[in-house]
Image 1 (cartoon, rainbow, N blue to C red):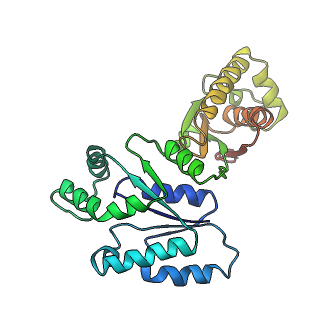
Image 2 (cartoon, helix red, strand yellow):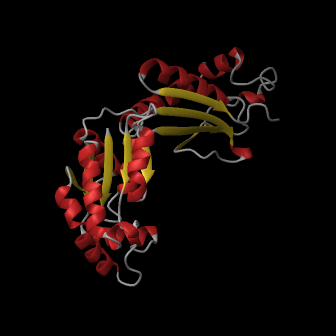
Image 3 (tube, rainbow, N blue to C red):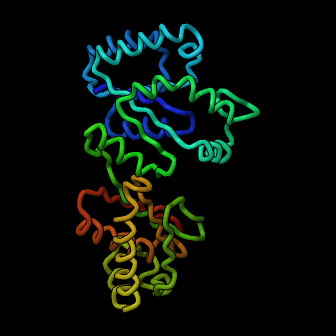
Length: 284
């Protein structure tokens, strides 16, 4: 399948390209029209089956030099390769907010973005009219755009979903994670002489912690929260959810909780990769 993505600047073309890339498409952003036939010819001798390319006003040679001829060549390519043209659009006021939030200028205007948007709409009208699919992204989240594109192109999601659990010690600094769990409320094996030099991987430490009802209550409530969070987060917000679990030194309580949650999640949540890491377990 060959898909061309075009549309108004700021409407989400790069996001759309990334969505297709995540679904095993070979993606190129703004390949000059003169190179597209040669590129597709070369690709035909490879094992690459699905290709996505973007075309927009950043390709100034396409729109401002021999525009009519370039359009005719482009439409011939669409017909020859049975390619699909997807046009993304967005309301002006939302485009302005997006440019402002990203601190970027419209490619056709420096001082007055609305003039640039209006000029772009005029140039893009024929592509909009010829598009196989039209998508207004004004009120779309990336998740909405993903679902819409995949549905229009009859594609099934091909995205690996991953949960990564990371134990750490607060005294060595935080980890970069989406969720931080502080397990310093659990009793500390460090102050038990025979457990001090062991870790949360050792059975003696695990038994010590499991003998406390607070540990079980904490794990059960945390697991219920994570189960709900995962169901409404992975694949909608991000494809990987990183969970940091911290205690004072990162050797006992946090390691134990990561191991326990790892086993629970692995057993009860199918089709998701579960990873674990103990960042500070070997530190003094």
